[in-house]
Image (cartoon, rainbow, N blue to C red; front, top):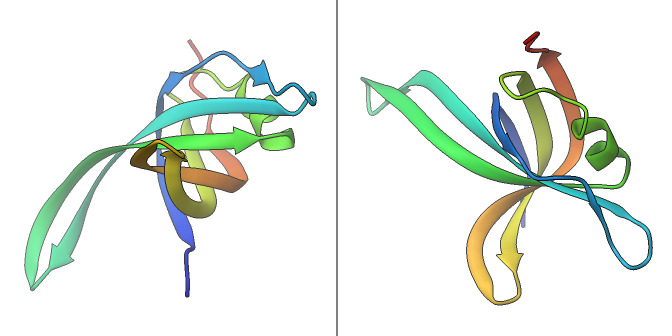
Length: 102
């Protein structure tokens, strides 16, 4: 089965960088995506938010990215936790497209 996602959006929320008991960096953040897509030959406005989980190197890198920056994430979907079935994008590769200069 395939579980591969590529998602680009504006960084609108970022929790503080934290570390697991084993010392691995973890960062949760949220992206806002807005675009237009054709669906059934009808132009459709896309406006959605998606939670992202970054681990280790990607988490450390994202901890310094300012809100408002545009980010592209490649990864896979999984539930937020064992007890929460909300979908989260687990980042494998993160690329900062534009940096918001506050």
